[in-house]
Image (cartoon, rainbow, N blue to C red; front, side):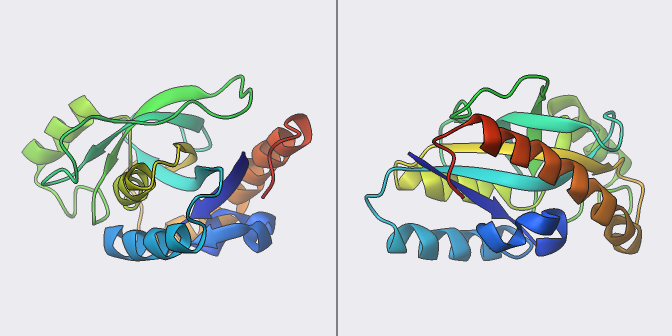
Length: 188
């Protein structure tokens, strides 16, 4: 089985950019990119590995997470729980997390305090593409996993994120490169 890397934007994956497929930011872009990829690779034995950054209300910046479940904002894309597949290789030391996938930045500037508190009770971290990627992979019968790094605590602007992501991507890349060296069936 071939593990295929997906991320929203190149800044998130640094030196892995040449071996990563990019979706763009948001659910619509992620859906479009994933459907196009899956149609081109229909029937191949794949495992989608989504990597990149997430915001978190309680995890320190720089924490690496294995996403175990995805909660979709608004109307769910499907009726079943979005439980990610086990990683196709050993991955010790990762914290497991529940991810809330929205189509906008999760921050006090976007959501009311009441709504923000309600989603903080359900999820550990937040992004804008995972629900779409998971759903498309599931529709094609392809396992989906996700490893993310915390970039912020819902308290920064996109400009601050851009400054941080350069250093954070180095840590994420080092982790993924370590997986590649330990897993002989991991092919980018």
